[in-house]
Length: 189
Image (cartoon, rainbow, N blue to C red; front, side, top):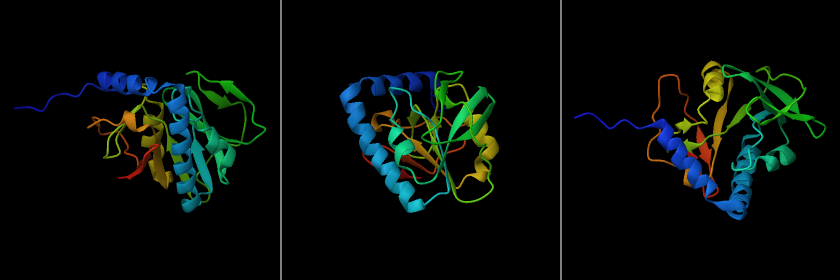
């Protein structure tokens, strides 16, 4: 007897629906709680560099991270599915909508693994307790992570607890996260 095939598209829709049904007030409350957990973890790790995305309206809000982190912050710029680079950002950064409608910095110094501890805060649509993530389906982070995992000291997923699923199907190129932070807990893998 073969194991049932887990449909990534169905998992993605289920997790997106759960996240959307939180409503603005709960998303805001849960974002604040998850954001504080993230800041606390980063304070304990003391990274030199944090690579983090600017959240969309229905994701865990990353604004607190961009306002409170003492590390050098970098945000992604996506040129197409297989190519993403990270540019340093600050309070003066000018943002523009990128190819997927996510805010990206217009300019900034490119990140390179030159010095210091580097942490990636990774977006996700669904996750499991083994650290597997399911993204939006474009593959941007998957391609980048597969190429750069060795340069990262920690990969952290950020999500609402309602986005947890029993199992995310992982393929050979998928890179698991080291931990997932939700409004309820830090899940170390």
